[in-house]
Image (tube, rainbow, N blue to C red; front, side, top):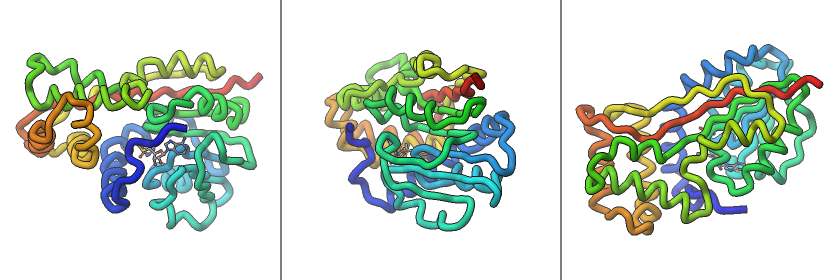
Length: 261
Ligand SMILES: C[S@@+](CC[C@H](N)C(=O)[O-])C[C@H]1O[C@@H](n2cnc3c(N)ncnc32)[C@H](O)[C@@H]1O
């Protein structure tokens, strides 16, 4: 299994970054999860639960008669989920043994980090009840380069470095583009696949995520040879300038179900 790019970062810093990810994405995720018709009593699985906000929401909606299972290889930020309907598993999805099939599975920004994405998709398919629902949300970082008319700006250099970092790790920076096809090939039936372009001003929730990620991953971005520490400094400064608009990346959210027969 490949290493996760945020492994070995300070716990406090990573917790803050995950909370920024949640603040930027949860409203869209929750609106889409509502479309699955989630009911009290459902068994739900949150893959790569991170700092736990969507797991908490799933547990709230499914209630004490249901189940909200969180799996993450790093459960440092999931220590509070000790009561019904929550169950936490510290493991990778491919290695964990889960006792029951699920009515609903959600995963956000997980597959792009895993070379074994196809095996993960097949496991999630097998974990879903016939007729069950899933929502998979993944990014495309090449979208950010669409706005880089001048390739010499710091923002353009950092955008290219982000893409190259994924390529160097054997991963696909444009992961979202191939996701619908991979889901179909794994056996899922696609319902909808809306995409959001994160075109936002500085200090917006997504600009905050990308600015913080650039600070945490400065070394990894610079090691690509495509940007310098000065470029990172300027990228972070612009992420906090509310008069500066930038295209940070796009996210595609695919709602699928498992055929009943
Ligand atoms: C970018 S974070 C996203 C967290 C959360 N899904 C969110 O969007 O707020 C990715 C999370 O997935 C976890 N992760 C990545 N690959 C995993 C795998 N194969 N099995 C379990 N957890 C994984 C990481 O530890 C991390 O907590």
